Each structure stands twice: as C-alpha cells, then as structure tokens.
Image 1 (cartoon, rainbow, N blue to C red):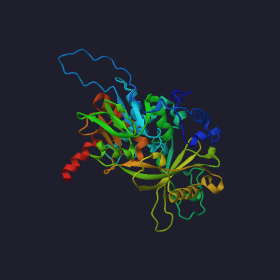
Image 2: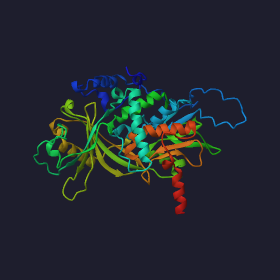
Image 3: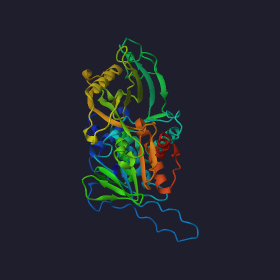
Image 4: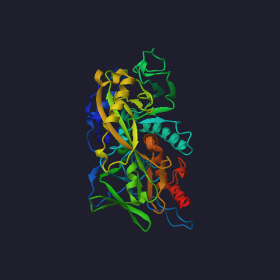
Length: 452
C-alpha cells in the first residue's frame, strides 16, 4: 500500500460510494477505488480543542554555543496553520519535510480538510498559463514542477489521480448541427459539439490534473500535522508578535510561535487581515457526472466557449474527466460573500441547470436523460484580491503572522509552491523557491498611503 494511505486519512466525498466500476483501460484505478472504499478513518489526529491546546512539534537540537558573531534567530518550534485547504496542507507538508529544521505543525480547520474550494475544484494544472503575469509566472512554474515531484514522492498516480492531460479549446454552438468528427476531438465528445475545429491549449508536457480533494488530504496526511477541528476567532498578539490563535466557543488558545492564515475567502474575517487588505469570494458552481461508458472517457480537458442563445452572455465552462471515470463540469460564477460555515454552501438551481445543459451538448455520455448519473451538484467560493494577485508573506506589524490567500482559480496549481515558500520564510527567514515580493501583503499599505 502507498505509504500516504497507510496514514489512514478519511476521504468523505462522492468517490467513497464505490460507484464506478474499474476498467481495463485504467488498471491502477482498482487500487484507487479500493483505497477510497476502505480508508474511512481519521486524518492524523483530529479532535476538538481542549487545553492544553498544543501538543508539540518535534524537538529541536540544543542551540549552538555562544560566539562573538550574532546568532541567527532560531526557527519557531510551534507553528499553527489556520485552514485545511490545499494551501494550508502544502504549508504543513513543507514545514514537516524541511531539510534543516523539520517542524510538524498543528492545523486548525472549521469543518474538515478540503471541505470547501479545495475539495470542489477542478484540479487542473498548467505550466505556462500564468506567464503573462510577472511574479505569478514564477510561482506557477515552480508549483507545476513541485506537483510532479510530489506525485513521485507520494505515489500521486494511485493516491490522488495525478496524470498529464491533453487540453483543448472548443466552441460549442447554440444549436447543434450534424458534423463529421474532427481528428483532434476525443471520441467521447459529440462531433456536433464543436462549431469550429478545436484548438490545442496544452499537451501532456504542459498540462496535468489531480483530484483536488484527494491531493489535499494526501499531502496533509504525509505532513503528520495534528488537526484541530474548530473555528478560528482571532490571532492572539503579544508585544507585536503572534502568540497563537483563539478558537471560537473554546476557553483554550492554540499557542504558537508562528501562525499561518490560509483560510481562503474567510481570511478577511480576521481583523489582522481586514485591517490591511480585502479578500472577496467568487462563487463557482460545478457538477460531477458518471458517464454511461467511463472506460471510453479519455484524459482530454476542455475549455469551452458557449453562447446559450443569440445576444446572451458568452459563457466559458470547463470540462475535466477524472481518472476515476467521473466527469467534472464547472462554470457559472458570481461575486458573493461566502456564508460563515463552508458546510452550508449549496449551488443555485439555475446555474446547476445550465451546467447540465452544457454537459449534454458536449457529449451524449453526459446527458442525464440518456443514463449519465448525477454524482454531485455543488458550489464553492474562490478567494480573490483587489489586484488579482495572491497574498503570500508576513503580515505587516505582526511578527510571526503569515498569510496565504487570494489564489482565485489557481489554488490547486499554486498550492505547493506557496506552501514551500512559506515554509522557507518561516524556518529560514527567506523564501528561496520563488520571490515573494510581488505577493507581499505590505503592498496594500503602500497603496493606501498613496490614496490618503
């Protein structure tokens, strides 16, 4: 068994139903489905908070003898990560696997790991799609490479469905017309679904995918982090330094020498963040379908252009087949503040209905009325900032308080490099894997001063 799965983390999602039969075209999925069906257990040590709040990190060697030269600041011994999504999980992993100062953190999550966007995302990875944005390009390229490394280290093919994919742009007509199959179009896509020849957006060298929920949980399990279930109420600050986090409804405080805020759009609910910058939510809908013949669904990701009717707004839904046999379709977004509890998020009927309509136009395999099974209808909130860039770094004015949010639709892609950079910043004092200057939260202070 893959060592990640030996850690017995729980996967509570649509795939635990064991609904899809393994196929001869994907023998390795037998193992994946077996894992999902039999690993209904706790992820690391999950408990509600009760004092003492922190059950410590690994011990560190004694400090070196005094010398004439000033000693470098010791790395923090107790790190608390707030948020059990992909960014929090990756930060935990790279903290615990640091070459010099491995530090196993405590992670505080309100509902369950990957219960929000990290469990409901598409899981699409692209090497060079952020190249037009300075700063973000380096983050994305570093993270794409880390995804490959993690897949090798953690058995990602079996553990969370890592695989390279073909990626196409397809223009879906409002009114389908008979058409001959195009050689670039996969056989499971109806020929009438493409109003023009499809365009190649990515190859297996430049695009890939993971199952986002499984990836997040696998990385978190491999970190060995202790998971505390509870809602973070505030960061405890003493003498200008982060000293821990208070958890709502509890008497105890999770003590810390360093705190990482990776709460997605909920990061802005904390005063230490809202005083510096805003984080908004973008509600994104998705459906998960079981096609009639899952063995015939090839690894082709589709980025669609679709106008429901003349004069209507052009839509840009996306279609991601998964190695488990299901097909994920997403789109239909709108700006909206998320509710307090991620577990209460539901999709809007009109948006869900439109996604079903689009799915049926893409492939008869995905039509409910022709036997496709509805596995999930859902929504999540993507974290967005005012300048469209992630925020990664130490919060100005509060030493030892770090933030990582605002990744929008690229959270799964950029989670590994974000986590690795934060681990370096926390333990080494400087990020080496990527320059964090473009993502510093201090950039918002400069803008507010200019506007004053």
